[in-house]
Length: 134
Length: 297
Image 1 (spheres, rainbow over the protein chains, first blue to last red):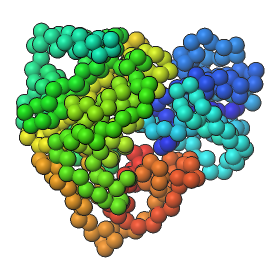
Image 2: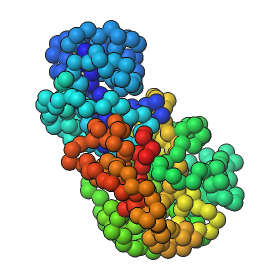
Image 3: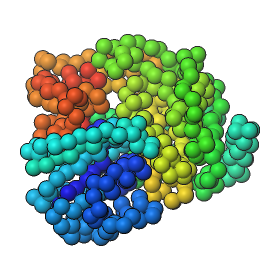
Image 4: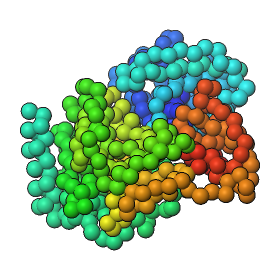
C-alpha cells in the first residue's frame, strides 16, 4: 500500500476536523501517482473530487482494503496502525503554515527519500512532493 | 462600483445589527473597542494564560455569526475608531472578488494606538510590533486603512493570525465560495494595545464544512513584557542559563517552534529548517521560539 498525505510547515494536517488546505493541481498529481490504478479515499476526501475520476474507490475502511501497490489519499486518519503495511509514502508539503490540532505523526526515520519534486498548485505558489520508500 | 457596493452593504449590515438589538460591549474584563455592534459572549477572564500556544479555541471552535450576518454576497465592514482611537470589530464575507489583484502598498503612515516600537535581536525581523491587519491584506486587499490596523506583536501577526488567513484565502481561491470572517480586537478596559484578537471563520456555501473556527490569538511576544495600557515594552527578565535545566531540543528555524527530539514534527521537518539546540527552555522562549503544540516540550 502507498499512502499520500498533505502537511504544512509544522507537519499539521487538520484543524477542527477540517483539512488545512486543498489544491486542484495536487489532486491531478495524485491521480498521476495512482498510475491508472485505484485511488483509495474515505467519504471525507471523496468530496474533494467534484467529478469522481475513474479509479476512485471510496470506503470507510480504505486503508484495510487497499492492496499492494495501491494508492491511498489520507487526510484525517492516523497512519500509525497501518505503518507495517506501507510500502511507500508520498508527502506533499504546502510550504505554508495553517492552524493545526492534528499532526502527521508517522516518523520518517528509517525511510529513504527516493525522489522529490516541486510544482506550482492552483492556489499554492510551491508544493513540494517527497516520495519515501523503505 | 466595488466601493459603492461595499458602502451599501455596510450600511445594510449596520441597520440589520441595530434592528437585531445588538449592543456595544462595555463589560469589564474585555471590550472590543471601536464602534461596531458585535458583542462578545465571553470575557478575558475566560482565556487561559498564554503558555506557548499562539491561539485557543472559543465556544468549541464554533463561530458566533448571527443568521443575518451570513451572506453569499461579498462585503467588508470596518468599525469606526472609538474615543481612544482604537480599532473595533471587522467583518467580511470574503469572496474571490474582494481579494487583491495588486501587491500590498505602504501602511507605514498609520500609527495605531499603543505604537511604542522597539527592536529585539531575538524577534523575527527585530521589530516587536507590526501594523497588524485585522482582516488580512490577502483577503480583502486593504492597505493603509486605520480602521483595520492594530498594534500587534510579530508573534501575533505571523504565528497567531497568519495561519488562519492562509486557510481562508486558500479555501476561497480553490472553491470560489465565500467565508464569513470576523476579527475582533479585545482590550482590557482603556488599554491602548489589545490583549489579543478573536478570529471567526465560516464557509457559507457548504455550511461550514470547509472552514469553521472561533479562536482567541494572544498578542504576546515570547521574551518580551508589554504594558498593554501604553504599549511600552521591555525584554523579560529571565534566570535562564542559571537555574533552568539544559535539554536538547530540535528547532524549526522557519516556523520558530521547538520540539522534543522524538516528536514527529521534528523528525518530519525540512532539513534546511532543522537545528539542534541544547540549553534551557526559558532561553529558547526568550529568543522568540514557541513550544510545539503536539509534543509540548
